[in-house]
Amino acid sequence: MDFALRDILAARKAIRGVADSTPFVPSSYMTEVAGHDFLLKLENMQPIGAFKLRGAMNAVMALPEDTPGVTCCSTGNHGRGVAFAARNRGIRAVICMSKLVPQAKVDGIRALGAEVRIIGTSQDDAQAEAERLVAEEGLTEVSPFDDPRVIAGQGTIGLEMLEARPDLDMLLVPLSGGGLAAGVAVAAKTINPRIRVIGVSMDRGPAMHLSIAAGGPVEVEEVPSLADSLGGGIGLANKLSFPLCRDHLDGTVLVTEEEIYHAMQTLYYEDRIVAEGACVVGIAAMLADKLDAPRGPVGTIVTGRNLDMEMFTRVVTGQDIELGDYTVKGAPYARKV
Image (cartoon, rainbow, N blue to C red):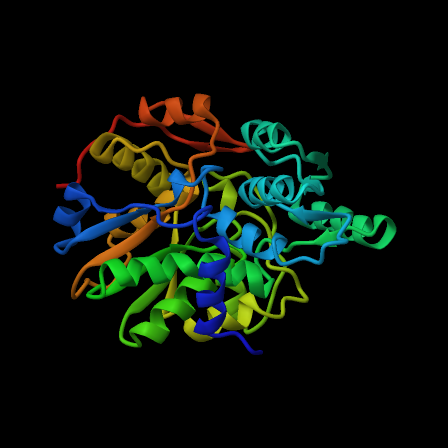
């Protein structure tokens, strides 16, 4: 496996001016909670509203000139990034998603001119359709996480965070298929081997967390979650994001739906930021005292804003949220400190 900081540096040049340089700002309230500076990398300010544009642009723009089109399996934001990049290239994009993907994300992808295929009730079902499109229609697949150019693009976030705050002690990275966590961890730990990089996921179907614990990729049941962007498996044939996460993360932490709910409220009421449940898992872990005490500044990534605003309104107004057969009991926002 040949993946290193040089790949991330090359990606920074490739995506410069399109998918880079998002703000990295302090949260006064979370700084009070953490006892050290707590900073938010605002990837929700990307043109598509999510960090996934970085990896998608780096991958799609590197494809040969005669590429007829691209496809991918996505929980929403990666598909949006691939659709944006394909439109820039003037090529066809077909995005495959399961029925669990929120309609707001489907609509956002279609608005960028991509075709959308809704297949089955899991990412595995959607992945099978993407593989069919590759085999039968000659499209090129852009993996949401197990692709070196995608991982390198996501890793540019780590470069920017460390350049802005070289004194960072801990990075809290939302963890799903591992593309973001792998890229950020390689960048951060190459620059500062002492920094701690923690992957954080929801406790309902945490594919990478369970795979690391098992010593290899495992299948998980995909269920509805407030952190829907973190859903799905990592692929049993995973060749890159799994070993990179296994080797470079200092640990993984799980948070509950109730903790995600409270963290969404916290980010909204304290920092006035609208963000997906997947964005706040690092904040949730800190609020729930699930992390070792920071020794210095902490950074986390607000990964995207592409969410169902009706659901978000219910969260911030303290109403119950139905997630399939699971109910998150609502409660008004209450400060921890």
